[in-house]
Amino acid sequence: MINKEQALNHLLDLLAVEGLTGQESKVVEAISKKMLAAGVKKSWIKTDDAHIRLGDGYEIGNLIVQLPGTAMGAPRIMFSAHLDTVPLCKGAVPMVEGDRIVAKDNTGLGGDDRSGCAAMVTLTETLLKHKIPHPPITLLFPIAEENGLHGSRMARFEDLGRPAMGFNLDGQCPNELVIGAMSAMRWRAEITGISTHAGLAPHKGISAGLIGSKAMAAVAKQGYFGRIVKGKRTGTSNLGSIAGGQASNQVMDHAVFTGECRSHKAAFLAHIVEVYRAAFAKAVQDTPNADGKLGSVEFTTIGDYKAFRLKKTEPCVKIAAKAVEALGMVPNPLVMDAGLDANNFNEKGLPTVTLGTGSHHFHQRDEYVEIAEYLTACEVLLNIARLAAV
Ligand SMILES: [Zn+2]
Image (cartoon, rainbow, N blue to C red; front, side, top):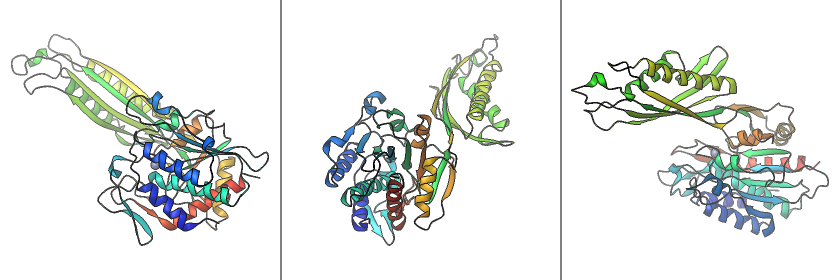
């Protein structure tokens, strides 16, 4: 029932629109235009004020399109696919090469997540054109996914029409159902020491750089740096940046270390963060100057998103699995070692499974979309809408 040529054109069109994180206006414009052409009424389309609440550096809010239901009594469902692409996709020009869409030049492609956006356009077009009975559907296109799932976190449940379940499109093969993902937390350690002349009075100084280095060495020695395995508990941690110091002849009195930690278990994530906090505190104690004075550290964290794990009996998982099976494929439930917009939806109490739309090698120069998989994903979405109507 899907017009494959049109579906492919939607994808090529949307891949050609630049829309890096925070600069999604043109993508919103392009999708809205396609929605109107598909028969969506102007009053069904809106953008929210997520960008205003996020502050400087964001052009436009989340795009929300609401299709009234045509199947009586069926609860509202939501589809979502993020608008933004990573900086590597700047200037991407898509082209078909054999069975794939690739970037013409040395850039990323942006199939993450324009393949999901285009599949949602194709779904809408097919439902309206063929008058296929469907429940009320919310189509959410969040901004700012790539820099920390911000658009989806800012989306208000009431603006979405309070859907009963969600289907997020942000992945690879159309039979892959992401039913769980990690939680993540960012940390920041601001270290204050004492600045003295490095040649004349180094013993009077306290090096913030040395404190940070000792802390990181202690974290690593305890086995909490990089990939972390403690019995059954696993996670990761990283030191992302170090800033500090002014001159080689001056004891460094100020340094900022930042990083992140991840785990599938919220309690273990909290534990990893505590290991970091304790290591910085101990490094301060272990680094007095000749007069017995100590430096200090201000250790802060920002919770990025919470882990989730859906049961296979959850209605959204069951419907997605059935939709995949109906096309002769075997559903492949997965747990991801990364965060997704679905983390935020699940945290808001909206059970959301994530499906692939044929996009591969995310965030790389050799990123591509497998055309057959993308078209299959369009069929899967259509099956989901049909199955949710009864
Ligand atoms: Zn993505």
